[in-house]
Length: 431
Ligand SMILES: C[S@@+](CC[C@H](N)C(=O)[O-])C[C@H]1O[C@@H](n2cnc3c(N)ncnc32)[C@H](O)[C@@H]1O
Ligand code: SF4
Image (tube, rainbow, N blue to C red; front, side):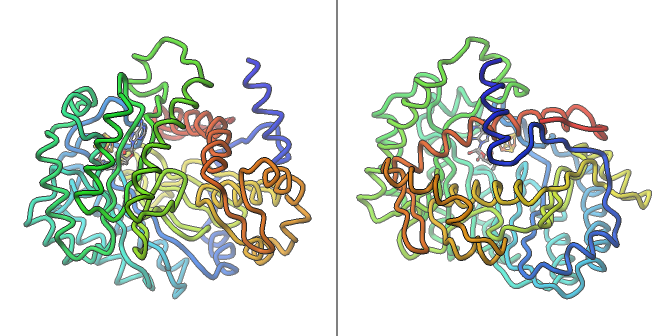
């Protein structure tokens, strides 16, 4: 209750709104064409909502793959691409990310068709970044990934001790995961990223130390190290009834993250986002890198300056809507200037460094006039370096400012995703 009150107060301070309301207002093609006309750089996100099996902690929109649903999905996505092709015309796409679920579930099962269709209809000028599962990375599948043009590959390894893999119900051993990593690192990808979850039940600092050293020795280009988030609508979230002390959890996570920082910095990696460390000189693996993007597929979300909208989360409803010639968009929200600026700041903080001039270019307003007071205060506290144009977060700032942001976003994501997963076409969702 108290935390809801604080959340609302702070949300009002940054966004000017007490409540953030998503409604079932579906933007028309002509409205989207108009929104896109003023946008120079556009990213593309493609959602593949299939996995071989479901992990108990996973908050994402995914279901178990079946051949029939998989091919229906391929055909529906191609139709969604056709619709957007006439809306975006020749505009250049400068960032392309394929996430899920598990995109590699669809290797040899239509993902190449989707990618070819995208390259045929959109003006693509970027590399492909794709998520994958350790069990899918056979030599044959790595050949396919290279052939379809994946240059940045992420592998969901999650743990490097068998007892934790077992608790997470991951279907492989540490030995098998390491073999997959070795095979991928031995190829010509520009960046191989390993996803690793920490703060697992009973995990010890020495286990984190061993895992960090293993990752370095395996020669990976990047490590993305997330703490285990317990979303209440997941099986693991439901099992964790006991109230966790949020403050002690934050301090424990800080301690664990510090172990990664020390080992990875010592081995020539630099911080590339709140949770990610990239080998110096490597082009980092990351989600869509430009602020504005289109999302394809079930639960794909799009952000076009002053509108954010989300496709239905239901894979069957997504396919049905598209086949009937209807829009798959389920919810949208018009974003005030204040909300856009707060969102911009959130993502730049996530990237740990940014330029004030980029803010000025986007909003035609001086960054210092808008957030100068707060930045000066954070500078005095040692959380960031407030330069003439560049702002760079310190390790302390990176963690604590983001822990503060997470306090809001996890709650918001939980409401938006949790409700969207249980209702295909909600009337409205109030965050
Ligand atoms: C969509 S999965 C990507 C790859 C693939 N599906 C897999 O699991 O191997 C994205 C990543 O999110 C992270 N993740 C999933 N659930 C999480 C949770 N509850 N807390 C923290 N990280 C989580 C995992 O590191 C996972 O690799
Ligand atoms: S963690 Fe990955 S494999 Fe597991 S259910 Fe989520 S998306 Fe699928």
